[in-house]
Image 1 (cartoon, rainbow, N blue to C red):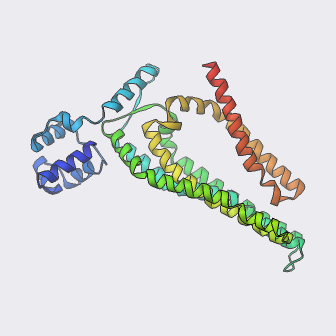
Image 2: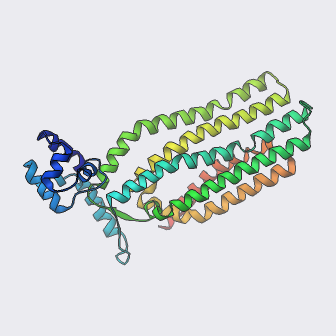
Image 3: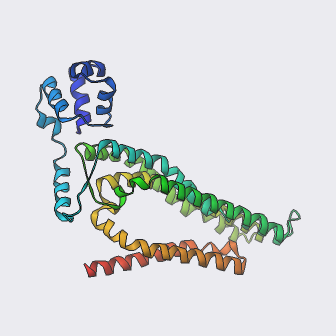
Length: 331
């Protein structure tokens, strides 16, 4: 149980409202509300006052971060003494979590737009090949490419603006730090409460991506006309985009908790590995984009060249794995 929960529990045991407790401590009701919601932490003098009012020891109020203190001590001894470890306050932690919660749909929406960007081009090109609705190839290419580049440009704008807004917090994902008292407990409580949402989101997203290919298989078996196949390829991309949107949205929020706890992909070892992989990642995805656009414009088979992305994703995982193996050998 974290300090916020203990204050709430002891206050209720004594039958006091937040305002009554605030009067006894000589603070505002808003201050007590922030303490109980883990929005801030009382200073040492207030903790002593709280212990006296509740008739408990200060050890009882403070004794929930021993495990975190041991981890912090380990990090302190393992890092370079010439580089002081940054302290993360309760306010900064909550600000980071709120920023990630607001940013999750932005990143998910931008990724969604990138995936669906060729859909109009695929549909119109399929209709033009069958001379349906008097759609010419020139019209299909023009409108389709305008939509494609508009979607990509909008997505890039969203990625860049969001990245700039969160740049002042990037040290929490890339650097080493310690958290002040109460932060670790608060984050663990919130992560535990979010676990069911995260699990459902990942499950729904993965199942959607798997099911997305079923309609295309059905029309292939039925030997449907080419324009129907083109429409269903667009539908495939739309369903995959929906699944990926869900996965990214819940994963972004979940990763914010892991970042503050410095666990999983945000552990010290993983941060060190990621810093080394950043250069490789930038080169790799620029090359993948160049291959996709070059192949697409040369063959004009936008309904087929999208396969570059899933292949590139699988290959990147393999390349990154090999690089990590070499890094372990070097260490």
